[in-house]
Amino acid sequence: WEQFPEKVAIQLNDTHPTIGVAELMRLLLDEHHLDWNTAWTLTTGTFSYTNHTVLPEALEKWPLSVMKELLPRCVEIIEEINRLCIIDLQSRGADEETIARMTPIALDEWGPGVDVVRMASLAMCGSHTVNGVAAVHSELIKVTVLKDFYTFFPEKFQNKTNGVTQRRWLAFCNPGLRQLITEALGSESWIGDLPQLKGLAAKADDPEFQEKWRAVKLANKEKLAALVKETTGYDISTNALFDVQVKRIHEYKRQLLNALHTIHKYKEIKAMSPEERKSVVPRMVLIGGKAAAAYKYAKEVIHLINNVADKVNQDPEVGDLLKVIFYPNYNVSGAETIIPATEVTQQISTAGTEASGTSNMKFAMNGALLCGTMDGANIEIWEEIGEENGFIFGARVEEVDAMREERNEFQPCPEFTAALQTLEDGEFGPKENYEMILNSLVGEDGDHYLPKDYYLLGRDFEPYMKAQAEVEAAYLDQDKWTKMSIMSTAGMGKFSTDRTIAQYAEEIWDIKPISVEDS
View 1 (tube, rainbow, N blue to C red):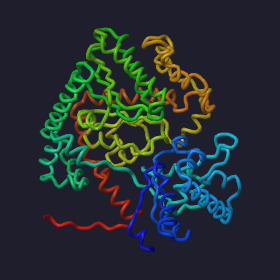
View 2 (spheres, rainbow, N blue to C red):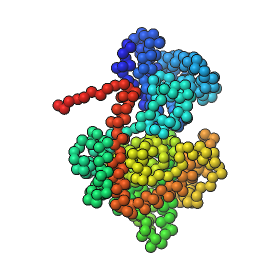
View 3 (tube, helix red, strand yellow):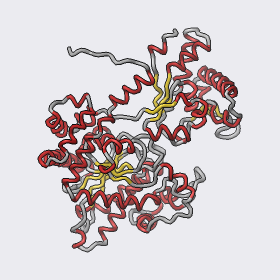
View 4 (cartoon, helix red, strand yellow):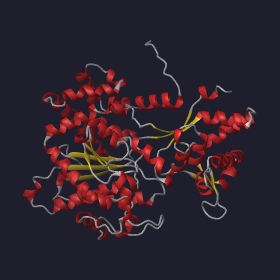
């Protein structure tokens, strides 16, 4: 039995599967009749835990009464883990208040007599290692949601920056770019060795290569235009800048910031003379993503985007200068067409909220330029591709807390206020349709007792406008833009799941690769 952790490694992917800690203990104790100490040693040698969020509300908690009814034996084991956790923390000098924050069972958490199981605490107790999924995220969890555990168990903490599989998200979904990269690098070996992409940098200034690069992008844009027509009925011009934000709909990911900026652009174009409109860079804004079933705020954002699309896309004065698309039922199949066609992608979460992100990697790998905040893996992407090959804006992680303290005194720029006023005035449907959106920005947050604008949309709006203006200025110089796009792809060798899994294997699971000879 002592060899069990050498043969088996179980990675808890966030808190969802944490019941596995108690279940493995049950199997070892009840089915295989091991003593507690041996079973616990094997269990903690087997499990490791990946944390995917710095948002406390996303760390699962389950009512103890419900778990007792469904999994009574597992609860008995969790109660013993909890008792031993208290003893261990007392021996390490933790005070009662700290211990109460760390134990797997939280007493009276949801009211008198309503105890809960904190799955993150159970994962921390039952795992030999915990990791975040981007460098900044792995540092943040040490001082936020897992601060107490880092104080007493610093040796457990690591970073494993996420990756994406280039086989699907470049070689398969973008065959035109795959062929061009292969021609430039001389073989397809880069598909299994992504750092070879750095060889593209030597071609970044080559006019002939740039022309081929643009031709691939145009073909992908034509494919997406056909998909948009099929799914929404809207016609979009492939001469426009394709601007995309596709991801789960959430306040911290700030699709609302994108929507409000789009409203600002619409009002700006409407106020122009016909002569002034000739200088506008045409733009197609595509937003896609799903909302959790009970997440009313997110559904209001989707409603707003669709209503903005209805109005903008039918305005003959605006025409192809601005088109707005909410892509319905966003999924992997849609992404395989959307991502290769994208020219600029919005990665605009409030600094310190996005653990990593992976769509940023998929887009950058396909030559889309990032417009975004210094958050999650954006930071590491820009370290690899060069900050000059993207558009960075907004508050930094170290500034966010102070800005939140100053929210009630802060006055946002007039453009932000004007965009918000269009919702108040019913320009995109009845004000009542946007009750939660408006309350989040101009009222008290009744659920969390926080002041307005927790995710700092007002703070970041003016810098966001400036970044978007930089996007348009760069797009006017197609040689410069194409060079930036090539350099984006060239710098993405780090962000392969090959690298990520190799690091897990070597530094957490302690397993060695096996060479497989060609058959």
